[in-house]
Image (cartoon, rainbow, N blue to C red):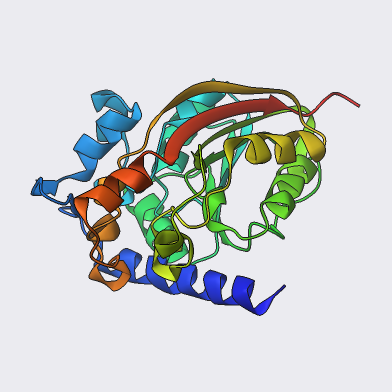
Length: 278
C-alpha cells in the first residue's frame, strides 16, 4: 500500500468516526443554499420507500448512501447477505427483515465507531440475525463461498484499491451468488481541486473512478452478467459544503461554476452481477 493510500484510508476512518459520534436520531445533512435536509428526505430521493425508512432504527439512517441496494438485491427468505461498508447498519436492518429469522446479515465496516453504533442499534431493535464486524473491505473477516448476496451503498468509491474490494466480494460469494451495489462513478475526470482533496474522498467524490473502468474491474475479477440497472445524477452540492453533516469534512469554498463542473462529472449507478456456479 502506498503512502497516499494509507493517508486516504486514515482520513476516511477518522472522518466517518466523527460522523458516527456526532450522529443522533435528529441528525441532518446541510445542503448548500437549501437549508437543512433530513436523512429521511435524502433516502426517499435515493429510492427508499417511507415504509422502509420507518422500518429501520432511526439512528441507523445517516443519509450517507447513493441508492437502495437492498431493493436491487431482491432478497429471499433464508439467504445470507453481506453489506460492505455497513455504517450504522441501515441497509443491514432492511435486509434482516427480508431474509427472515432463518437468514443472516453480516455488516462489515472499517470504522470501529460505526460498528459500535450499528451493534447498539441492533441491540435496541432486538435484531438477532445480524452480525456487525470491524474489518477492511480489501481483506474482509468473512469465510470463502459463504454468502448468497453482497450489497454495498456508496462505499467502494472510498477505497483506494477497488480491485481488491471486488475480489473480496467474489471470494466470499457462494457459486451462483449475487452482487448488488449502489456507488458513485465519473462520466469525466474530476477537476484538480477536487481530485487532490483528501476531504473530498470522505464526501465520496475524489475516490470515484470512470464508469467504464469501474465496470471493467467487476468483470475482470470474475463476475458475469454485469449490468447497470439504473443511473442518475448525484447531489454533489450536499458534499461541496458541509459534507454529511460534519464540519470535520468540510470541503473548500468553491464557486457556483466550479460546483456545476463537479456535478456534471459525477453520477450514481446501481450495478448487479453474478458469480457463476462452479
